[in-house]
Every structure is written in C-alpha cells, then in structure tokens.
Image: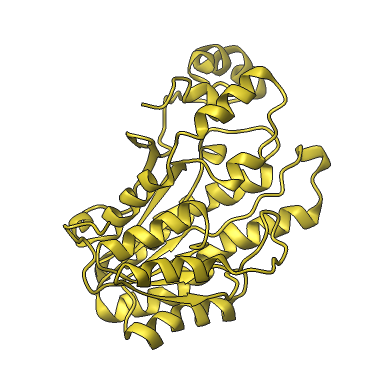
Length: 307
C-alpha cells in the first residue's frame, strides 16, 4: 500500500545494496514516498561472492507494480568507475540525483588473531571504500545544485564493540569520520550527511554465530526487528524535512531511536611541570580510572528487549 504523505516527491535516490534486507526496505519506502530509485545491488553473497540471480530486479518490479519509478544498477561500489556508473544511472534515468543511501555491505567475520588480510580488505572495500566512492561522485552534483543528502549505515559493532568483527567494526567507524567530513565540507552547499546504526533482522545478522543459549535467544529476538523501521528513518533523513540535521549518528532499534554521542573529552588533568611515566601511574591513573570506558559489547549497552 502506498504511503499517502510523500517526503521525497520527484527526488532521485541511489540505494546501494538495495536488493535485500534493509536496502530492499529502504528502496521500496523511498519509492512509496515519491522518490525515483536506483536500486543498486551487485547480487553478491553475504561474503561478497557472485550469485546467479539479481535481487534488484525483484525490487524494481515491485516498485513499478505499485506505480513508482525505479531502475536496476548492478555495478560494484568497490570500484570508483562502478560508482560513476551508479550515479550515472540516476542522471541518465531521472535527470538528477538528490540523495544517496550507502547501505551495501558484506561480512567476513573471524577473531582478529585469525583474520586474513584478504578478509580485512574485502570488508573495507565494500563498506568504507564503497561509501567513499559513491559519495565522492555524487558530491560533485550536490555541490553544483546546492542540495543533496547522504545517509550512511554504521553499526554498534564499531560504536560499542563486538567479538570477531575487527574488519567490519573498523569500516563502520571509518564511515563515521567520512560522514562528518562530508557534512563539514558540503555545509556551505546545503549538502547533508548523517549515519544510521540499524538494528534489524537481515542475512548479515542471521550469519552471526550463536553457540550459547543467551546468543540463541538474542537471535530470536532480533527476528522481530523489521527493516521497515530503518527505512522510515532513512526516508526522513534524506528528505527536506531533515534539512537542519547533518553530521549526526542515529541508532534505530524497532520503535526506539537514539541520538548517539560523538567522542568528546571526558575529564582532564594537568601538571605544571609536565608528566612522567611515574606521575602518570601515581597521579593520573587513580584519578581517571573510574571514568575509563569498560570493554563493552553491543549487547551489554543495549541490554533490554527492543520496544
């Protein structure tokens, strides 16, 4: 059923990884709010390997069946030339580009002391390099037209921490720095850039090992987290209604939305004569120890059931 109130009328939007999971929901919701959508999906497996079918075709067919406009683009975000073709698909098909949702992602989990350089590179190429590539190409058009919005997907695996995801966490934290820099550099041209840290059931969440009763229970509870909740937030942040919001990080967890803090000084101390290893141990350590951040994981911080 189409949404009555449209937040994206006539706007052209690129959604990377738009064929499955969260990306699929965002593509469909953007179209229901009036956007013309480039559904970009290379049709890769969760680990980044090619698959036979293109999920983007199904999403585009659904959007068109509901009276919307959408096109398929199967180029990879990992290459700059691919990003040029992705943005070009919006320009060629719709004559403009107004928003980019950087959602494409893969997982290659493993404990850090076992992680291969190949698995490190593969995850950063999709998440971090992919977000840079598509944003960099689109930013030229945003600058010329003095408008445009980026919505990037980050993760509490980076914001807080998780076992066995050093590559994924590093990429997702890198996206925070990328988003803030884009927000600063495009501010004078009315360009905006924000991040969403999504809690939603997807094939990536389903791939995380659950070998304890507590982990099994968390996985079952995660199945109630519909990706449509993320899609609504993405539509809002890409729309003109969010024109004053930029450089921010939001976590979306079912019916909960959190504004996430960004690194700032917690406490400070000084000594007129400077510091030595001895005074750091005897003075600084006991003073700051109560304020040190614990070695938490995402499940420790978001420890209650989704509302």
